[in-house]
Length: 178
View 1 (cartoon, rainbow, N blue to C red):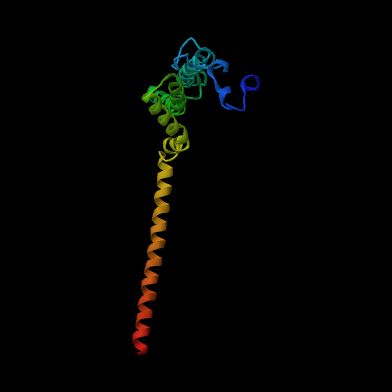
View 2 (tube, rainbow, N blue to C red):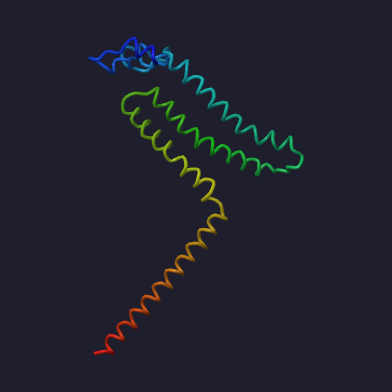
């Protein structure tokens, strides 16, 4: 980056150093369209795509190997599928933003804007998605929240009743004093 900036910087056009010709991960051709022959594809996108595929395969194979190699685990086919789906769901959720980012880099026009928006939404809501999938989905969590809400409702009802009684006493004492 320092070499690119030093070789191209000028005070008249301070943003000129951002040209595609000088970026080692350049993706656009002279027509400003994505080109698979450019370094962005071979230097980043292709390896990243292969890593995503490898991760997906490992998320399916790991529970199977783990169950086979551990004699203490007696797992049925349905339990194994449930485990694979749990692993797959977190893979899809976390990999979705990477995949959308990948698609942002290789598209242009209106579809580029759509993928950019979806990328921003999926990346910025990952914490919420994890909370919903792995915490809010648990029966124990829902039971705890339900009990907490009932306690809050009970306390609010007591406060309301006390305020109503205090208001009634206040009104009675005011009418009795006249």
